[in-house]
Length: 243
Length: 376
Figure 1 (tube, each protein chain N blue to C red):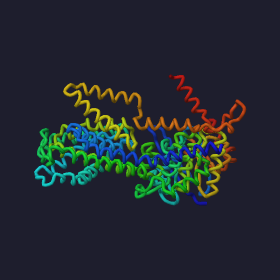
Figure 2 (cartoon, helix red, strand yellow):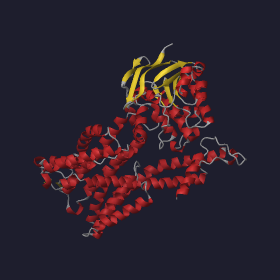
Figure 3 (tube, each protein chain N blue to C red):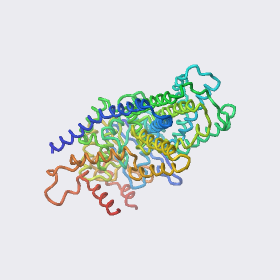
């Protein structure tokens, strides 16, 4: 197996709190890897460091065989590593279609081309059809429900044809029907060759979808294995319930 | 269901089609009217007023590129007005005019100078956001102001210095300035229109909405905002150049005046930020109103009270700016007439108990509306 993402000895302190403490993990190519852990165990901080939104104090991140420690968020995105946010972040005053097009990735030269080119539109409409958002294409994203915004954010990061997508709590705050929709889309994209790393609190969702699962506690991994192994691990139970 | 969809589709399609024609048509009517306006034998004070209205219309449109579209409220633009004024002044200070139009030919150079000075200023100050950015840019304004007052060898200090008077006939003295500014306004509006329709406009909108997210999805955020700032201050410097020539005198009290910055920001807010016509409408109302009231109400300071009253009334009734408020009302009317986002009756279950788990079925909107009613 070859790892598409390796994190080695990552640490991050906020004041006196060690949010991430010597965290090492690897995401194998072609998996849907789950990252779980109690609140405050450092999952989102790890995400933020991997994707360049935060700078780690120590440690290294390698993506697709190259050291990307300290890379800018946009540069990582252009290299094929993209993410979504816990609170769906879309551009409310742009239309649904524009939200996709703006994520399509373009060089400075393209700034002087049309706002939405034919090729952009074709690519975006394909994704909108896949995510059943086509009817809303011309509506401002502000008019979408929260669940639809999460779908839109997910669809938008796929515009750049990423190799690895990090989803930060894709099911938080959305209804059960939408959770199934989200799962369906992850599976579909996974089948098409995209690797996923998912932070999630909804255990049934994680157990259904992810393999392997990495459990984080106090800023470092304490266990890693299949869903069945995680469920029977005393270390994991300890972390969640306290000993 | 399909018939409802189809009618909504038709309505929005017709709207888009109408908008595609309405935009250029509106521009042609507006600029056509301004081209013929001076032919009605207007008095000098009216033309003088229009010259200043056009100056502010160009500057607020230019400010809108960075303050409106990029969402970076610069308070330093008056510094670039001053830079343009002093640059043209220094070029023509000891230079006899052979041709009255010569200084106008230098305007592109003035614009370039403004943009080149603006580039590093933007690259540094745009590392900050929002209120901090406003403070940093206004600090730059005060630095330039201090230099203008104190570099006496170059600027003549608080006395300023004269440049040759434009050799235009007295009867039509204002006209060349009027038409040059009108051309500059047409250029600025055309540029704004092109930016809105380009990827640059899309990128700026994403920067305004959520810059960190925009950067995270590969938008070259630093590039677009620095570019917008440079274009914006380059245009502002050109207006400063026209002003210096019009007055044939450059003095720091007006050339580097914080009130100019405040005025162009107010005009843009009044007309509507991040819209094509908003800043122009705002400039015509505020600068036109101010100049007119100053003329009519003359020596007393009463005109300032009347001016403030106009501004307060508009802000009271159109708080988001004139054009966005009008556009919003029109959208609501269209939505009402086409049935809007309400699902067609066939989709709603017959039972009074609606499923609680349809996303986007308007539960949250309903709660928001009810709590808004409760508050009022």
